Amino acid sequence: MTFTIRDAVKNDMPQVLKLINELAVFEKEPDAVEVTVDDLEQDGFGNNPAFHCFVAEVNNKIEGMALVYQRYSTWKGKTIHLEDLIVSEAMRGSGIGSALLDEVVKYAHHLGVKRINWEVLDWNEPAIVFYEKKGANVMRDWNVVHLDEQGIKNYISKL
Image 1 (tube, rainbow, N blue to C red):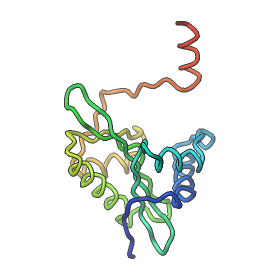
Image 2 (image 1 turned 135 degrees about the horizontal axis):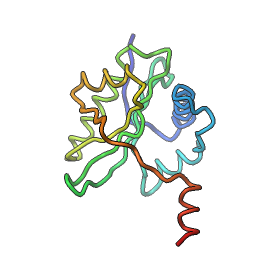
Image 3 (image 1 turned 60 degrees about the horizontal axis):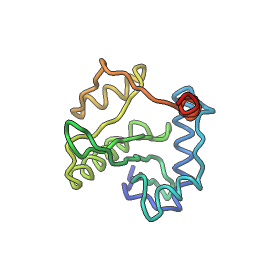
Image 4 (image 1 turned 120 degrees about the vertical axis):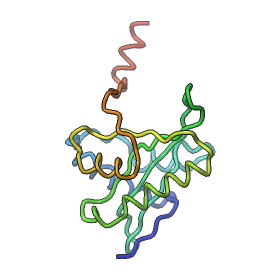
């Protein structure tokens, strides 16, 4: 099977959102996706893009994507965060995930960053094995912390 990895363009965002929704179902959060195609188009392709996205294309259909954005570490300096690396269920095991991660690492190297961060669910053993085989350090002693939109509102209301 032949596929192409390339930078995403604005017109790819409907297919990218489809992959995002597929991931949400896989991660047992089918109703959690709030982002829209318009959000992705505006946030990724305006004057100050919030993210960079790579897509994997097979026969003119996007079957995978990797979305990254820049961060800053007080310990390391410039880093990037890999928000999601998604391969459609039908294409898993085809090499697309590996090729997308390769592209992310090349992009990070080109930017001169000191680290690439991402999260993986503790029950997603195939992904953990994949990342460890690629040389990533899965740090099981760290917990992900976040405030969702309602948590932010609650926090602000108490200030």
